[in-house]
Structure formats: C-alpha cells, structure tokens
Amino acid sequence: MIIKVTTDKERVKSMIKLILDRERFISKIDINEFSTIATENYYEIIKELSTVLLLLEGLKATGEGAHKELINYLNTFKEFSEYEINLLDDLRIKRNKSSYEGKQVDKSYLENKKEKILNIINKQKRIIDKKLNR
Picture (cartoon, rainbow, N blue to C red):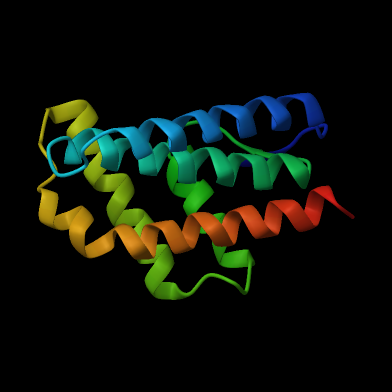
C-alpha cells in the first residue's frame, strides 16, 4: 500500500549515501564469483532509489507487497518501459528466492542483464536529480 508521508530530505540524503556505498561495494567485487550477492545489491540499489522517488513525492510503500508496489510505482514515469518494469519484478523475485530460500543467481543472469539494470539505475538517478534541483 502506498501512503502519504511528510517529505524527509534528511532521510533522502541518508539513503543516497547508502546507495553510493552499495555501488562502490559492487564495483570492488568479482560479480562472476559473487553473482548472487551482486544481484541482491543491484536490487537493493533499485529499491532504495525507488523509495527515494516516493519520498520526494511525499509517499511511502508499506506493508506486505511494498517492494512490488515500489516497482509498480515506476510505471508512473514515462522513462520506464514495460520491459524494464518486468525486468525489475524478475530481479525482485530472484532476490527474494536468494534471500529467503538460499537460491543462487547464475552468473549468466548478470552477464545478460547488467547493462539493462545499470540503465534503469541511471534513469532513476536522473529523475531524482531533477526532483532535488527544482
């Protein structure tokens, strides 16, 4: 469920710092050797960027299904294609299976999807930059 909240710029700044830390971490690991951990971190970056987008609009996803709601909310931005939304949902599912069932993510998944994932992250950052610099 998406609810109205007061925009919290300090929380936004804190989350952006965490996102940057995750990106630095991923850049330092061998994603072929640690494809599951890298996939989880890419998902967390996207989830956190989505959370920032909602916060900047005075919204928050909460409760069961909140992560799915975050992804679906990206449909409200013309920058994201249906393919990209579906990719993010697949990434969410892979991350959940990894986190909750111990399923490994094959390195071929990231080999095939990394460029598209990074493109989505960059789109999210551009939207956030526009919102912060209004």
